[in-house]
Image 1 (cartoon, rainbow, N blue to C red):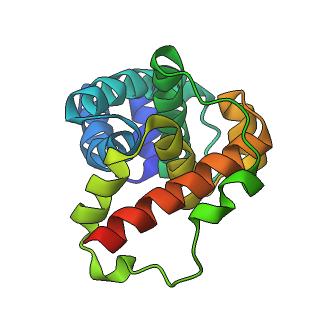
Image 2: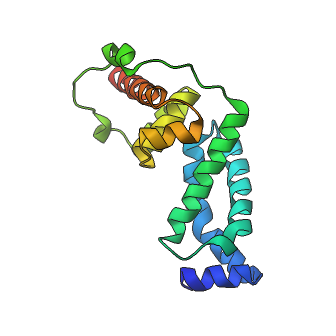
Image 3: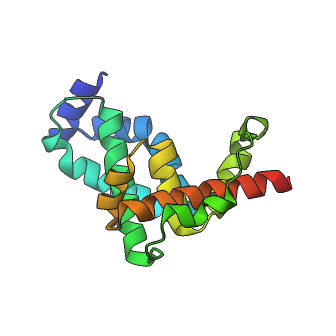
Length: 174
């Protein structure tokens, strides 16, 4: 069943279509949630909340763009909502203040297995992890991140620089 038909059947309340949509997207969206949350339990909780939002908002989906991208955006926003409830971000720090931590060596991530890299990202402090995921993985701009998180663009940039320095430090220790 194509995405257009799947969405229409879900809107009509077809339980088989709803299960098919869940089966198709839940594993990928769990991976998205896992990148933002502290552990698998929290990722599962956010996944569930996000999927409830997806099914609730399906009538609003205009079949413009890829369905997976639309669902992913809902999941990221659900993760961010959860993080906002639980975590305070560090105050404004200018990007220039953390540049001394960065070196100009090549990043050696290609030697890491994806699982190892995921563990490193999971071990980051919350502010670093969220900004790193949004910028490096999801492709948000620092301006979009600032608006989404209610911080300044400078804070977004400094958190990203700190996240890179954190990863570089951990990689060099291996």
